[in-house]
Amino acid sequence: MKLYRVNLKGMKVTSTGVAYGISYVVAEDPHSAYNKVKDFLNYNDIGFSKDREMDSIELIADSGRYNDCGTILYL
Image (cartoon, rainbow, N blue to C red; front, side):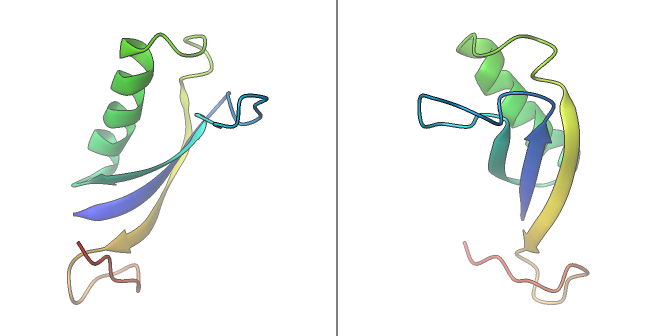
């Protein structure tokens, strides 16, 4: 498992206290990480579809002992 930071094109500034456009997700791969965020937002009807589009995904940590990102994720 890996920890990703998923940045969307919108919803990064908020007055409600939750910036849905910046999320941290535990998933096997970047595609699964984005789908988890997108599915949650779609199910709860949060934001506009253009704001739910992916801007970038960053690998933060990996649960493997020897990994390429240099940071271990403890589960």
